[in-house]
Length: 239
Image (cartoon, rainbow, N blue to C red; front, side):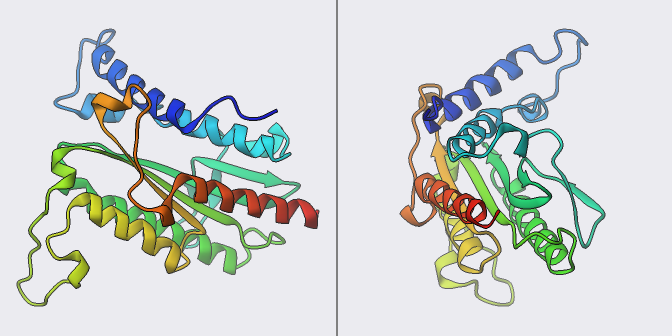
């Protein structure tokens, strides 16, 4: 049976959950976070994506018991452990792991570098841990990174780059945060840090209707899913 959930459903759930958390946080305790922090600290906003991918991999023949969305701790190399968002573990073989992230405005500058550093560090940590035998006898696990970026005026406009000593790379010159994320997600795959990466843009206004757009076919949702499915089928043939 094919998945009932769609990408639009996951995006709609994200915005609806985010809005609801912003409205209800602090009702019990009487304490409400300042600004948009109430929307960030609520969590669960990306659960629609997790459920969507759980259905996708089960449609590929992976039993539910092999899909982990709660017990997702994996060993690292530079740190003891890390909590991932989504794992597939089959008979002791780490098949795949996915990191889901979002970046919502209006403050894009404060968090962009943090998102980049987190993703680079997580990939380096896991890939090095694999090299050192942390998941033995697993073959190299498939690693995916999905980013939902708010389609907002401040994520679309050029951002002046600081160049006190050296020029930035030409494609980075005054690039918007949308363009920066597009370059970043593309290079995650081209540099083989992740097997697949996906960038989705959605506005708060249209997102509650499940609307979105993708800036690049190279880091599209469909290509991301196709890569994961290919990995699953390869592992199934080896078991």
